[in-house]
Length: 160
Image (tube, rainbow, N blue to C red):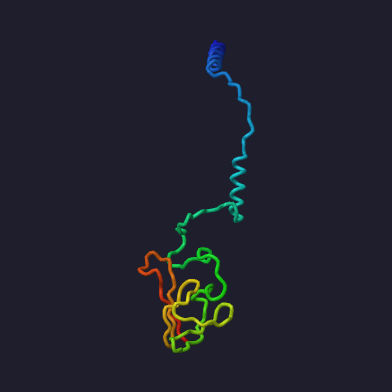
């Protein structure tokens, strides 16, 4: 007697559980995923990694990641003119100093292995000749350091 009752209770319980489960909802149609945006981003990253595709226009502002203690780069200073005006102070070699009735002139060797005579006021690529004395030449080199009190630094070259 217990078995048919248990069997009947189990059947009622199963019917009740089946009535509580929601009806299956129809699945929407699967649309293909649009991967064109992802592919475009990945292609852009590859292009940047290869050295192209990314440009930055500073609009006259300095690069915030470059040290202020270094001088300006060659790209910032522009194309170098030929001859002595295209040579930097650090690139020339002092070879001699000559005394003339008008004052002293210095004999230097340029980057092109040619000798040049310079006098005070001669303009070089990154500075000017300030003064020439017996045994030494003083150059005034332009610097772009905002912390500096002077917009230049003096470089003294001595005869050796």
